[in-house]
Length: 412
Image (cartoon, rainbow, N blue to C red; front, side, top):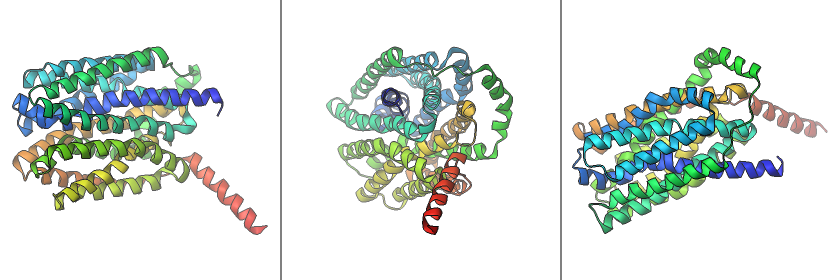
């Protein structure tokens, strides 16, 4: 890769990280860190808290298809700018929210903004760097860990200073950072090179083939399960720890540790999967994620939660990265954005179902343990599905070349 391409890769990946910080960590995942303080301030039940988590997913799910259509007409950059602006507006609104209904509307806006941002940005990066998609997606998704690290430190600190408005200040800080990312995107991000008209036509003709592709559907089901379990864990783990007697400050430190380790999880697993194949990497990360999700069910202790956070943070962002990269392994380069958008729809459905189901289980059927048992059972299904994943043709050819070279050297 030329020096200019390396500079572009790292520059775009850095802005991608910051975008992920805003639209995933702040708009989606930080809700679980803020929830204990916000629930008290707005007098929410756990069911209502679950509904609000689902609201964001509803906004995401209901507009993800339109986001793809808009990106194809407007271009990725303008669509991304619209999405981050909507998320920033939603974050600013939550700073001043006064009721469940108003909060519902701003949480809905966060989901809509995320759909117009995240998928178009990943598609833009893959279009620029198709041979490095595992690595560049990993770098971008590491922003989720950075954001959770920041939220895990900032939110409990602000809450300890002022329990009534600390969580509001946190949303306000997130909004200011969101505005900064809007400006960075406006100044530095460019659309990928324009595709040939014949390639665009072939993409339209092959869209039905992608929707029926069993390999893509299998990855979509895996991504849907990731959506269910990841959002449930992020929304309720903080409350689970506090209810189990874990000190609020230490619980916040564990969330910060989660953020630190997650920063490295995405790029490391993405790099590994580019080398050893997506299938093996997916099996490893899904198995470890299942093990970590089951730990709090049986060990509601400081050690149990600590191991849960450490193991999950080393695999969860990697699982995101591997699933996203896998969705584009078995289609032509011009079809990659369409395949990614398609499997992301499964993910959005999973995130829509997860919070409501978990809130219902917590409120009426056994508390937090039942919600984490539900997530663990979903991950069992996900693990079985990972065994059906196949490596990309490019990686298969690479392995064949390596094996041939080794055989020639041995015979010599």
